[in-house]
Amino acid sequence: MHKIAVLGAGFMGAGIAQVAAQGGYNVIIRDIQKSLVEDGINTIKQELDYLIEKEQLTQSEKEKVLARIKGTTDLAELSDADIVIEAVVENIAIKKQLFAELDNICPEHTILATNTSTLSITEIASVTKRIDKVIGMHFFYPVPRIKLVELIKGLETSDETIKIAQSFVRDINKEHVLLKRESPGFIVNRILIPYLNEAIFVYGDGIAEKEDIDSALKAGAGMPKGPLEISDMMGLDTLYSITMVLYNEFKDTKYRPHPLFSSMVRAGYYGEKTGKGFYEYD
Image 1 (cartoon, one colour):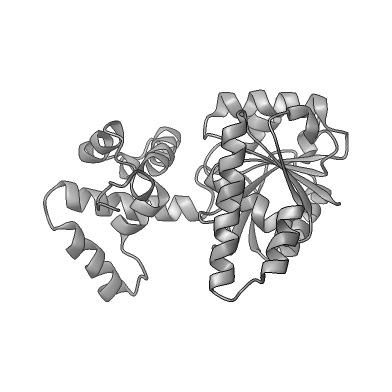
Image 2 (image 1 turned 135 degrees about the horizontal axis):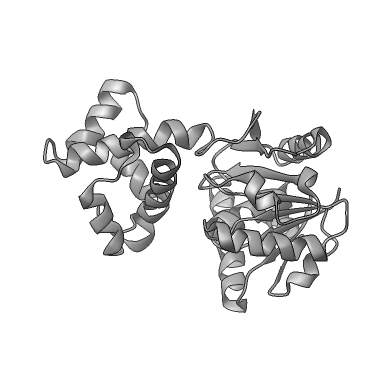
């Protein structure tokens, strides 16, 4: 196994491409526009420069990592990849369309992985003729700094596919947990989202100021970051999307979004990435 392809050059896709290249793999990163691909590669360069500043990487190592990464807008260039990791928008219709196309482009041995944080692996796999070679491979933002990868079995994911995915995750210096069957939100988000959502309700209901909510969880529960800080870091649009998937799947009111949360997302207040969420950012 030598070549990894990443679909989507946003923050998640760029991060996955970076850690794969740092792990010694040749990587091709693809997006629909050249400007998006260039933005993704620039994101990787900035992250590598950060590692150099922290004395965790040398200039020579940076150049070797970048030499392993190629950008493209042509989906056909993924035809010789050993693993394709899809990291596009969290929309089941778009993911299924891409997987159907990849199934026709890629050779039989290629494993198709999705970075979805909530959606059904089995449903995504259903549009392919290789349902045994489709797996969930959920990375966390920011990918270069968060060690965990959730591996999620679809209904027909083979043991061999799981072994290859586990080997890849170890090669890129990540830790993994394996879900024996898919479930909305997997492990982390199924536990994390209600926690964040309840903090949003405490704030939205006017019970406490945002700073006090975050301080309470940091000082009282030993959390390194407060729940509203985490929400802004995740991206409120992403958090809202995951919350709604869990709400619709489980029909449990603990997942319902607060009206203030919904209004913030509609206003485009997504947190750190837009400069405004629960907090404001420069």
